[in-house]
Length: 421
Length: 193
Figure 1 (tube, helix red, strand yellow):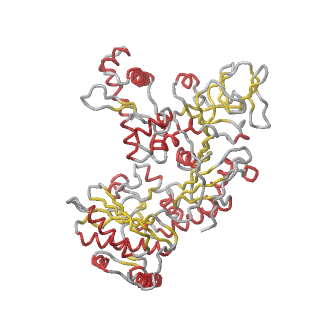
Figure 2 (cartoon, helix red, strand yellow):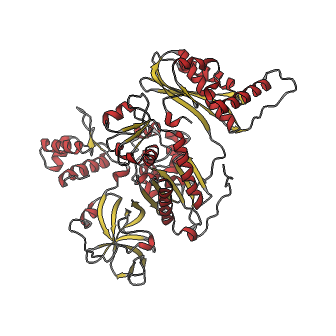
Figure 3 (cartoon, rainbow over the protein chains, first blue to last red):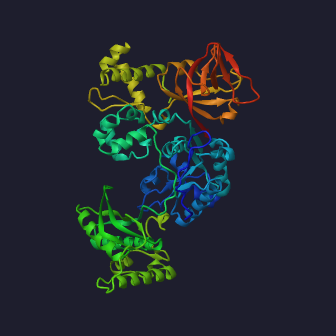
């Protein structure tokens, strides 16, 4: 990870901040089309085989034309677009392309923030003399990405991250949208509330009850009223609706959370199997956690029943940990509390959050708690897994999965291969 | 979204009524106000529903809803000349000024023809997002209606006794005019590839 750029950029030149939001169009599907030119121009759906029970991770624009959407069950996607090419996808390829995109951005400015594999913020404040107007810079960046990766991106150019993000979405795919400084609120005004980052399905529904439909509807309401209607988030929402956003483009020094999840091959109500999967996913997440030298304190378990209703629950450890056993114990307790409906389970996931660098545990002279032994144990397990693959060592409950799943060097072959890291 | 003039009247009436009374009108009220048969109003509404413009709940009075508020809700009006105001454009591609003026939308999108705004990064074929305004500040890029009824895209400068419409292209001369009707100010540019 490169050095962080935490300095606050002074406003220079025309006195305006210029932020670009660059977002790859239909990323996974486009990468597949680039790597396999026969797929160009064809509907491509990444997520799994059409009879898989997983969901669409990414659909090419040719597939989207048939109404295929991200996160739609693959079976439904097949109904809408039976001629589509269904691919399982490979995370490795996506990361490579993402790194290449990042390289292109880096050649323009060090002030970049990869918000995810396929999108980034670039701060071009004060770069007018080097690249010309940011709109022209966006044009050069777009071409450079196309040359380096073959991918089309959409770019939003504006005076803040928030407006740049909305702008990149405005004319997607394969477009640049520039919002003139000073006209942020006017630009946002006619757009629907769902276009405003931070308005998820629940906020949208709540706002709908007050008959708020467009971002402009919020602009005319005072912050106090919004705060009364929505609670503390109301004020932040009012700020965003007016296009005010002063957050910096800053590379996160470390991730906010590490999560692993999977969809079962077949919905299951077998407690043992779900617990086994949960403990396996927790181990994977914890392994990742140790590999980046972090510790975590909060565990979140997510369940999705076969009727697609989803629930989650989180709890924190008394102090940060890096040990599988701490997280697994908590994850299983949370699962026990969550699994209340008499319905089969479709999907299960676990996330570790409240991350902090290093292991703050105080070593004691006498190892009463067995902490140092566990420390050595996990160090040992990690190094074996590094050499022989994740499934070379399985612990306790995860053994249960052997009856159900095939393995490869990465571990069990799960249902969301495009995301199997 | 192509809708007929009469259908537009129906939608406008629903919106106006809603604004004035806070509830959508009933079929009877619409029929009376628009001087139409109730059946005819219903047919208009059915067509509008098929186009996704309105929706309502069955058997429920005053449940009409006009659907709007997505990114595509900004209407695309046509072309704007960014060169000499009179440009050889195929018939039918010209911007429909009357429609632009009559609409009560607060912003709209125009496709640019010509290269007079090249220094402002607006190229032939780009789209501009315009907010309806009847005045502008110096240096802003505006859609202006000239005395002869032509619409053009230029930078706006108010001088002592006249208004200068400055192209952002060194090869082109400014247009001077006494009376310029500003139709709107450019708030965004979109380039599709």
